[in-house]
Image (tube, rainbow, N blue to C red; front, side):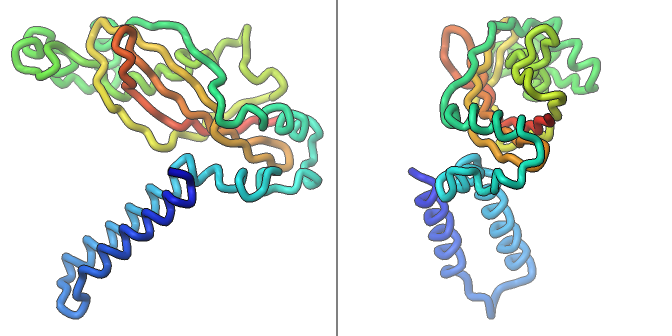
Length: 226
C-alpha cells in the first residue's frame, strides 16, 4: 500500500463510521466518541512515516527551496544523503538485556512491577515464562544500540550539533525476555532541509537474536545543525 492508498483508506474508514451515525439522535457521549475517533485517526495518519515522505514524492527537492539555505554545508549534506532515503544505513552490535540491567532501570524509574523484577513469580504466573524488560528501557538504549553517541565515531561528523527531537510511531510488538540479546537496524526515512539545519527521520527496528522477532519499532527525529 503506497502513501496515497493509505490516506484514501483512512478517508473511507472515517466516511463509513460517519455514515452509520444518526447525528439527530446522537447523545453527547457518542459525539465525544466520534470526536475522539476523528482526532485519533488524523493524528495516526499525520504521524505515519509514509505521510512524512509525501514531500519527497511530490517534490524531489524535499518541498523546500534549497536556494534559501543559508549554510552551504546543509545543501551538501542533503544532496549526499537523499540518495539513501528508504535504505538501511546501520546494523548495530548485540546487547544482552540481563536481569541486573532491568533491575537498575526499575530502581531509576520506580517501575518495579513484578513482571520485570520478580523472576520467581514471573516464572510461575507470567505468560512469558519469566521476567521481561520495560519497553522504555529498550527505548533508552536506542542511542547506544544505534551507535549515535560515540564521540570517537560520530555518525554525522559534518554537523556541529545533533539534537534529539523525539520519537514517532513507537511500538513494542513483542516482549524482551531477561537474558535476551538485542540489536538495532536503522533505515533513513526522510530529510527536510532548512536555512541552517536538516531534519532527519530514521526508522529504528530492534530485533532479538535467534528468533528474528521485532521487539521495538520507532521513528527517531533528529535535527542536525551545521
